[in-house]
Length: 466
Ligand code: 4AD
Ligand code: MG
Image: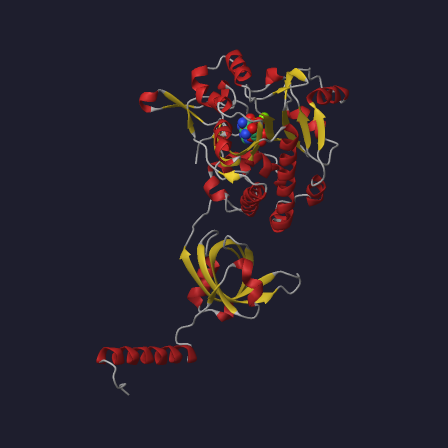
């Protein structure tokens, strides 16, 4: 009925709206179009007894005569889908029977509780579509050699174990961001192309840089953060750093991710306190948020729980004496190798700080110990269970003259560091910071042997692909 005082256009619009409502009611009443709830596997527990649609990949498949068991994954989890032959037209059953591992699929089914396992759900398949059919997926669900897996890293990432590691990595990043913000640190970024070394000239990666000569890929953003604290007081960066490390070990990458934190008016003691707080927060966060991932990785979580307690501290001097008692032939003035780190921490359930090292084996920027001019106010934090060095940190030399002395002694070009010296010339303050290697942290929390599994596409001396 046209309304009085309304224009024809307005009346037509109302009519169109009424027709739309009528058509939609008919569609729903008679289920002319069937609408399924598109669901993520992690959420299926909310839909027991209901029909849902899951889009993902076929992880594994086995069939016993008239029943097929399809293991599906969608990035959020895994679920077993059960299909019974009599429920399907022959052509669809054939597709299901032949579908290859890692094909992408769209499956509709009713969610049910697993008959035997509490908290486990299944999907009773009602409809099945292949999005893309994968033929002869190269990685079978059996043991493969590490080189083969690394060559196929782009596919290997789909395995359950790699899924778990990727998620723990994400949790550690989140935990680090959370803790530092709680402690008043501002997230910032430091450059990758740099004109000078931060951590010694022997591990620099040179890159031709237009008319400016050679740039070097950053080894750590630390020096830049020391400038940025002049603005915001406390800050941190989190990004890729590069080291032309010749060492072929289970802990070294040539490209890895580092979080460097820096704080104005933070001195040595407080620096250690912040580091301990950070690592314990990371452990607690992962224990709370990564239970499924740590189970997949068969991580002994009791050991991780024990690590969330006050850390042990040795001075470098004490560490060398203890190592000699334990049978190591390390001499005072030498850096600790992997074996020494393992030996020193083997009986400790918590990470161990080694502080106040000889300045001769540490970088130029570390502040000399006021109690012994041969030492610096620094620390290495060594993880438990053979996790090795997680963190390197120090109070920074804030006196311009002493810093120039160290720059010259190390044979560095002072002109390259003039900007860095300005930080000491204009309102110098005591300050400290540290850097945590993300992959080392992932390796330790996951309890895995080789750092190459802790980053999606590892770069080592012998590997640049894929
Ligand atoms: O001890 P490093 O060399 O300290 C620094 O770079 C300082 N500038 C950090 C700072 O004070 N802001 O490196 C810090 C951490 C190490 O403790 C280790 O966890 C990790 O970075 N790391 C590596 N991780 C993987 N592969 C490598 N080649 C690594 N070298 C260091
Ligand atoms: Mg170090």
